[in-house]
Image 1 (cartoon, rainbow, N blue to C red):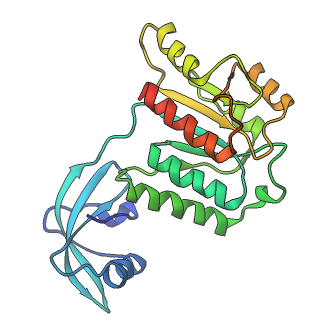
Image 2: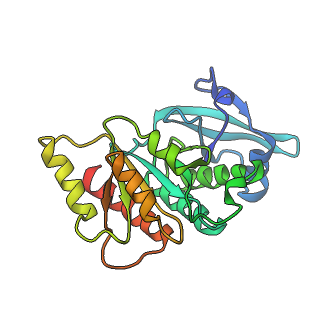
Image 3: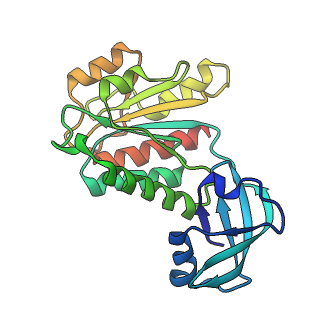
Length: 252
C-alpha cells in the first residue's frame, strides 16, 4: 500500500468516513503517476506515529478526494535514538547517506562542517535543503516509517560537539584508531551500566579526507570515544551506514 507524509493539519479532526482533498502535487502522483483507481487504498501519515488508511473516493482533473477508513498505530521507531553527525560530502554521496540512514532508522541527521569538507558545501541554500528533506521523506515512506527523521541545519563540528545530549553515548569513527573497536565499545557500554542500554548514541563520521588529528583531539577532550570500524579504509558514506547498522544491531 502506498504511503505519503502530509501536513498534520490536513488530517486534524478527521475520523472514520471523513473525506480529505489531497494537495495538488500528491493528487497528481496518486492520479497520474500511480494511477490509483477509485476504491484503492493508500496510507496518509502526519508524522505523529499513526497511520491513516484511506480509500480513493473521487479522482479527476479537479482533484483527488479520499475517505478515511482506519487510524492505527504505525511501526515503532528503534529503541535507540541514533544521531548521525555526518560531515558534509559531495552531493550524491551525502544524499545516499540520508536515504540509507533513514531506511536503517537514524533519528536525527546533523550535516557537519569539518576542516576537510569540500569547499562551498556550507552554503547549501533553500533549494538544496528542500531536496534533502524530499529524499528523507521519500525514504521514510518507502521503508514504512511512520515518523520522519529530523534534519538539523548545517553546523560546524565544534557546535555539534557542544550539542551532544547529556547521558548520550558519543562516538567518533576514525581510520587511525587501532585499538578500540566499535563492537567492544558498544558491548562495554551495556555491561558497565549493568545491562541498561544507552537511549541515545551520537555518531560522528568525517568527510572524504577524514577528520584531522586536531578535530579528533577536540572530540576526545569532550569525552567522546574514538573507535575503529576495522582494518579497511572506508569511504565516508560507507562508514556511516556500517556504523549505524552495527549500533542498531547491538543496542536496538
